[in-house]
Structures are given as C-alpha cells and as structure tokens.
Amino acid sequence: MVDLLQNELSKRLQNESTAKINWEVTERLSKEPKYVAFNKWCDDNGIRHPSVRYPTAFGKEGHLIGLSSTRRIGFQESYIYVPSKVIICEDQFRNDPKIGHILDNHPEAFQTRISSDHLTVIFFVMTEMIKGEESFWAPYFAITEKTDMCQFWSEDELSNLQDEIMKAEAIDETDVLKDEFLIIFEIAAKYPNAIDISQFTFDVFLQAHTLVCTRCFGYSLPYLMIVPLADCANHHTTDNQYEMFNSRIHRQGKQATTKEEEKFYFTHDKQRINFFKHFSEEGF
Image (tube, rainbow, N blue to C red; front, top):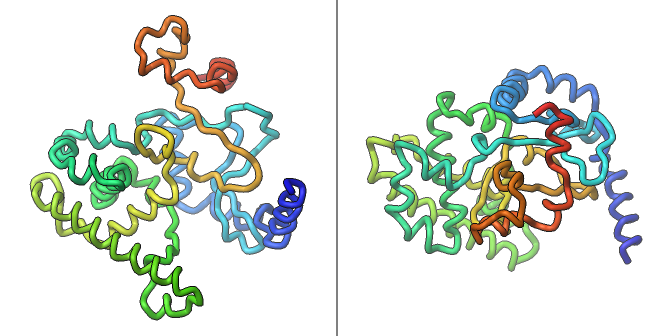
C-alpha cells in the first residue's frame, strides 16, 4: 500500500509539474522589490539559510512559490536557522509595550476559548498589519500570498459546490469567523490609544486569519507561532522537521537540568542531532 501511494503521488507530481522549477520565473521573482526586501530583512535579522534559496517558482507557469535547495541536504541536516526575535507568537504579544497588557486583560478571548491560540496570534498580527511599513514584520507580510479558502466564498460561489454538507460547513465557518472578529474587534475598541480601530477591519482580520491558519506551527507546543521563511517550504514527499533550539539548556545537558519544565526540551531527536556541529559549520 505504501509503494502504491508513493507511486500515485509521484505520478501526480509529474502530471501537475509542481516539483519542476521554472527558472525563468524564478529569476524574475528574485529581482522583484518585495522579495529583495524580504531576503535583506532575513539577513539583517539573523535568519540563516545557506543551503536553500527563496523565492523559487515551481510548475509550468511558475505559479507555486517556495524554497529550493542549492545543494544536496542530508538526513537530519539543518538548513534553516530562525532566531526567536523574528518569530510571531504569544510572547511577542505579551512583551509588546503598547498592547502586551491586553493579553491577560481578556482571558475570555485569549485563554479559555477553543480557538484562543489562534485568536491570540491573529490579534497580534492584525495590530502589526495595520502599522503598514512601520511594522517590524512588514517585509514578511509583503511576501505572504492570499489563499482562496471556501469560507471566504460568496453565496453564488458556494452554490457551485455539489456537496450540500460541504456547503453547509463552509457557511458555518463563515459565521464563526464573523463571531470571532466581533470578539477581538470589541477588545481592540477598548484601547484607542494603542490601536487604530478604523484600520482594525474585517478584511484585515481575514488576511491575518488566513496567514495564521496556513502558515503557523505549534499544534503540539504550548502555543502557536509563525516562523518567517521556514513557513515558505512547500509540502511534498520530503519530510521536514522543526526543532526549537535553546543554547543555554542545550549546553548544560539533560542530566544537569534541574527545572522539570526544561527537561521536556530534550526530545529524542534533540539529543541525537548535533546542533552545535551545524551551527559551527555555518559560522554561527
């Protein structure tokens, strides 16, 4: 069965040509200001990716944009390093001097709801998006693509679905989105000195929601996070693994770690992979 699935997937990739690089489009994209600015932002802020290039256009028309390797990457070999300061997560929200207090002031939205982890990151992303070019993450937001999710479709578009259950679920999701936007909009409206409520719109909410739902990591971690550049890797049959690396804890080792919560840091793979070897080889 595994062989059958691999063969079928391989045929599909060949038919759709999404595994083939369109070098003409890739070269054109590499000169576009938004990608030039994003790569400079990555370099300036310590993101290292010596073995991959971005952007790379895949497919006959170059419609799929992602990462490509510049050399053969071996098993359990690190190829992207992203410092915590550029990761969008709950800590960035909490430590923000203007809006950090909002997080604990509204547990009904950011702690106790099933969707609290998403709303936390969505709220923070919205407050950054409405800053425009003044946002630290502006170069990153500029390269994120819009996604056509069915809960954003109009009633006429949904009528084309031939599955009534799918149509009903899409409508339900749309209602949920509207309710969740209202929740965080009412919270934002309470802080006019910190948030420009005139810019805190449903359209911006949909942009932030799409970004979080399609790019976030962390379903098995204490909270969600968005990791710029690492989230640009498209998903084919090649397995990717993402690890959080803490130099202090890693150096002292599991046996010397006294805090129980820090012992969970040492997963089986963390103890097996020599992070310091990769860091020293790449000049970090």
